[in-house]
Amino acid sequence: MENINLYKSIMCAIIGAKKSQIIEFIISNLDDDKRFKYTIKELCDELNISKPTAIETINLLLEKRVLKKIKNGLYQLNI
Image (cartoon, rainbow, N blue to C red; front, side, top):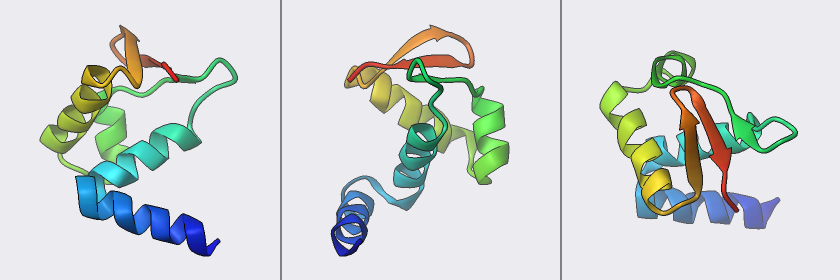
């Protein structure tokens, strides 16, 4: 448990608390096929975050090829 908290602290320091929260949320909400089914608006509403933060985080994950966009509101984990 201590290592998990340390990992979370490091991630927050590197990418920021909100982006880290979004990534955690994505991981927690993957279906059996490792797909994430939330629109940007749903993500913002669920986490009470701004649209620019959500878009920036999703774009970062797409750019790094962690996520692959299937269509609006549907992403595939690519690891």
